Image (cartoon, rainbow, N blue to C red; front, side, top):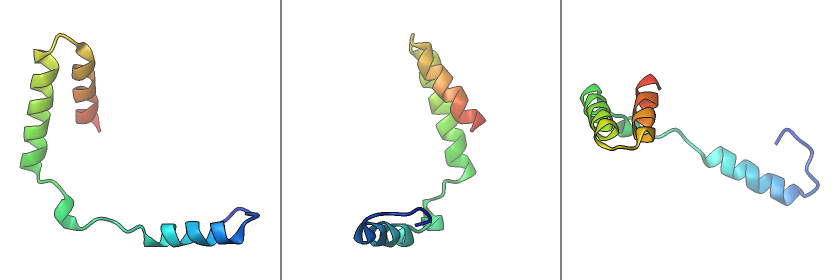
Length: 64
């Protein structure tokens, strides 16, 4: 940890957790086809529901 901690055991515990975090396997990535299907489903749900919040979330997902 880069900050001072009064409890060294807690700092060691947090360091162990931070060191154990790893990037996921490449098998967890989605293909472009899956991304397109997700966008289409999100837009359909956004336009099909009377609540425009779903559409806003769908458009934010496309921008992301």
